[in-house]
Image 1 (cartoon, rainbow, N blue to C red):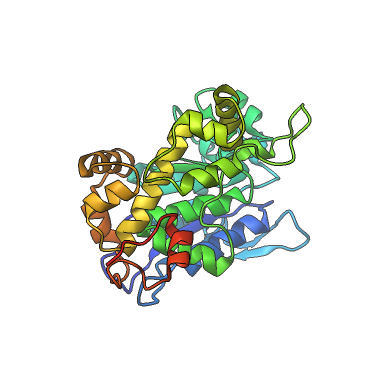
Image 2 (tube, one colour):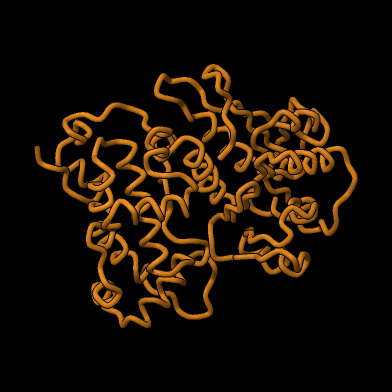
Length: 355
């Protein structure tokens, strides 16, 4: 979680380090998503700055340049630094250099600044040693080269992004959206991230990983084999289905279901279900006044102790602390969000409690 200034009038600083050959989409999506984040009073939560190895004109991979108002010195004041891809240099990077901007990145990492890459921007982080011994991802077309060039990096080509705490990496261009929303969600909660997603008309969380986009040597099916089963499971989080029942709903054997599930999502059914239950619990903590015991029951954790244990292991805080940090509005009508039952079910996959 990035440190946010105690003064509500001061926004956290996000610096985008662009280099010649930058992809305009990756630069724009960072500005769009972080720029759209607002608190309940409508104040901006982030200040986004465009930096370059040298302030001024930067070539893109399109037929127009961009102007970077800031040089590498601006990285020193950033809370988060994002490194988008450059088609001109990324895959030729092998070892850290001694340029000013590389030195500033290393200094920022030493201070504990959150540093993230989009697409092949991961080659920059790897060349500076920031991914050594860590799990990371990049565009699936470049994953094998990243692994071969930097053997100390545990490259996972299946996922959309990887969060290793102070260092994060994402897959191809659009996966930068998933990564930015993830960071906003980590900083300010699921409600703020969902509002940003709605404003920019993108899903707050995409199903699956890169695996679904990698060309397969076999004839593809007409659609993800487990997609309908995953949607079905989300409506049953209070009583999570057994693996056998889940596989049966997909009309697959348990073995085939598990194999296809991992291929389509990059994770196991159990890990996916736990993440879905935690996401539901986070939303309920933010938007309702239900007790911890009620939320534990409604999300399938069973007991408050079980919910607290998973919260601390995954998020590093208790449910009470999470609620105190990310509660953005007072609940209405006993926790019903002031919505009709159909809207409530669409949001949370379960019925609202009766008065």
